[in-house]
Length: 146
Image 1 (cartoon, one colour):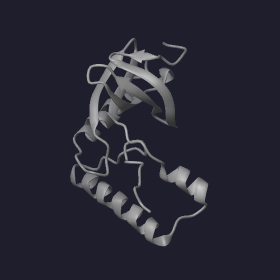
Image 2 (image 1 turned 45 degrees about the horizontal axis):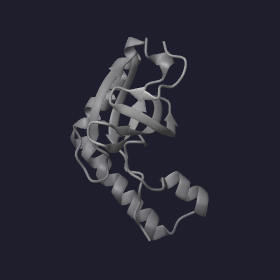
Image 3 (image 1 turned 90 degrees about the horizontal axis):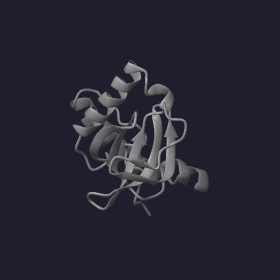
């Protein structure tokens, strides 16, 4: 079991931590083979030895990889390196809805309806494809609204 977060996982160089959830941390990373920035979700070390958590993490990556929608990030790769389980997904640079709400306190009702519409479209596809709900890190967090 690893005791510190890695700086390199396979072909991915970790640049900075950008999020944390129950099923792992999300990092901004560089994929060396394609020279692109990705979001890299990493299963916490304390779950790496738990077959049920590892299977759940892999199911999440596999289910998300089967979704293709403008409001859901694409999954690029999944793997394991040195006991660390991860999957790489499209990195979307922008402000999260949580950050926007923290900064503004509230958003205009028209903007809120537009965000709700985008989320509903993405969730509709998830239900069509078997019920997988993308994590908040998989949902596109950039809202290009005025």
